[in-house]
Image (cartoon, rainbow, N blue to C red; front, side, top):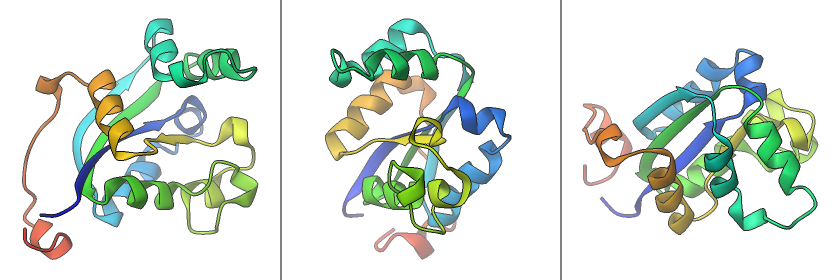
Length: 154
């Protein structure tokens, strides 16, 4: 299969608190992305700081770390053809009020600081983020019977 990629998706504390975990996961599954890892967890300060390290020193960095550690999150590792673009299109743009209807953020969010989900923004970051949030033994390689109807050459 060509362009098979991995991406990290986080259902942020606002998505968990609002009871949207199932709907958010189902949107990625319906899109055709394959679930290979899943965790419900509290994010440690250390993990939060490492995850958002690229923003260290920016004025909004402390708020990012504080928010992601403020309540439980659901971490998903997904894979699929062009998974990064597929996941980001499913989520919608970062600013909820600018996100298209039919996207997670466009349908369910209003503000940038409560935009429900995080998704990897590049193939390289997808690999790094999945490795940061999941140990290799926590990822399940498997083939769904339906994969041949989703991925060409499966």
